[in-house]
Image (cartoon, rainbow, N blue to C red; front, side, top):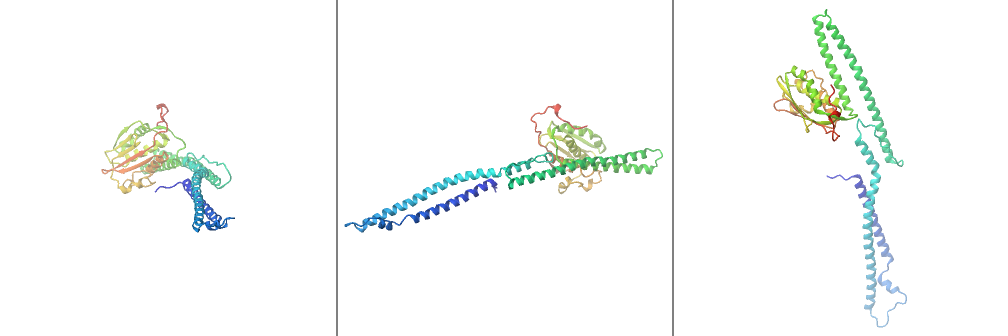
Length: 386
């Protein structure tokens, strides 16, 4: 069902109201004219000096009355016809004026709507600053600007918190790792102490991955503060080179098909996106399995891996934080990998889809909008950080 805009509804309402008032005026004019114009017989009899001459029959008198009655009816008909034409013409003009006036009245609302659509975590500095009289619309705009001020302040506080948390959380873990490694390097350390140290190092490493994942998730959830052209194929190449050791550890073969593709976004977050997908595809695999990575136009990124069969009903939960399949819950991951991927894709105005392969494993596809730049020279394109 088609939805009429507020401007259209207001124009229709104004036009109907005008037509209703016009009809009432025509009816009033009709009744007044009926009251002003005398009845034909009474008018003929009341004409001064009028008398029936000798030899004039009643038939002639009736003809005179009929003539006056026809004139009276013609006058009323002419009044109704001209009033109707004038009402239709005035109604058309009123409809056009109603459309124009409704547009002028709703213009501040369109300004507020356009500002709201352009808003994002990276553009909270936009304001409406509506000019005009102190009416309800200006009060609405001022209220909206005040809400944006509070949101900007909240996002700034979150940014400072994440920056501080990144330092405060990483430093103790680094100190703990150093202390454990120093204790294990002591020649006098007993085998029990070494086993305990290895266990503490594994726990410490998992805590570091968890904290790093939470910080990246918080950063991507805030959106992008700026976009630069990024060669997605170069980012994938860097990630795959860095994943060779992990693939050898899990006895997994990596296949790649990387076509040149440029997107606009954050190179660090895009590198983390590909890293999480590739590492998940390697860890949640089978021995002698494979991982296929493809960069193309549509989808921009596709990662397919072999592995255990994944139930279809479990697919939606894979992108939720700390949601992992029971068979992979002991892989050592933090449970944030795909959550970070979804958040990064959303921050880049993209979409992600996942399908379970009948033979086992997953097929993940990421669509990203093309770069806003028509042409980008290679030396201005930013690859992944190394």
